[in-house]
Image (tube, rainbow, N blue to C red):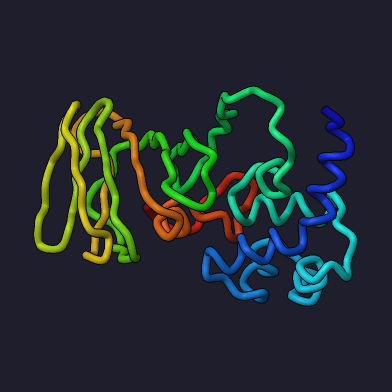
Amino acid sequence: MNTNADLAAALDGIGPRLQRIRTGRALTLAEVAELAGTSASTVSRLESGLRKPSLELLFPLARAYGMTLDDLVGAPEFGDPRVQLRPRRRNGRIVIPLSRNPGGVQAWKVVMSVEHGPGTLRTHDGSEWIYVLSGQIRLVVGKRNLVLGQGEVADFDTRTPHWFGATGDAPAEILSLFDRNGARVHIPEASDAGEGATARP
């Protein structure tokens, strides 16, 4: 297997792939440019093949999309199926990606400190599934205000205003599954200050 040739072929086809990723997430050129800290014209030229891809341009795009560089460029798979766990901090929460399926359902482990009172309720297309690994969480879905303990599961339509956070006397850990629309709301990449957060899950 000529891995160098395969990688070169992947880079040659990066323009259409970047465009598919962006349009699949319903993002405009300007939105992607803002997330990546570049210009809309640069993103457009990369997508159209008029600009040669470089690490300096691709790394910010990978970060903006919440993807690894290999996943962004569609690099050849070298046989290791393990997901590289890279914890991130978002609004005082630690989020750990457990999947590498940027176009579909996202799996995350979330570690949350105790919070007093619900934050801003969010809505977005799709659905969400939550499993409590440890501790307790407060889940607000519409008019329902619930407390879930270890081993309990919730599954709800995310078009209903919702919020969840740790409650009780100790931090909580959960597994969460949601689609890419949910990822944009719950695991934001935009305007990170180092590993800081923007929107509240």
